[in-house]
Length: 92
Image (cartoon, rainbow, N blue to C red; front, side):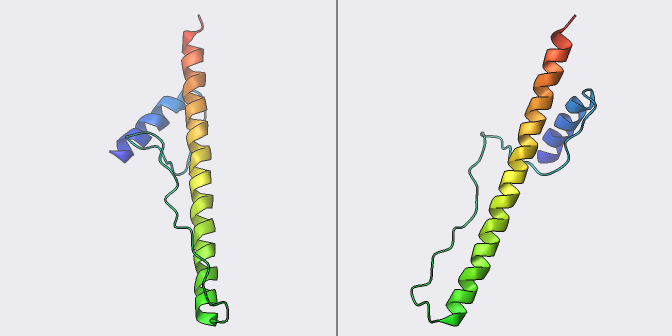
């Protein structure tokens, strides 16, 4: 289903001369919230294993949020292209 929606969006935007490449967050039931697990600080900061694990989890959390934001930017560009196409087709 996702491939069909993305293909339709790409075909619809082709008339504007620009195609947005990249991931998307658009879902069937509206725009989803970020699905990134925020890490919890370790209780014992002297436990080097727990601190290392926390630092790794923070990096993963940031990577997840960065991907979410990049996908959101792609979605905004797709929406703007669809609006531009609609406005262009409305002009006589």
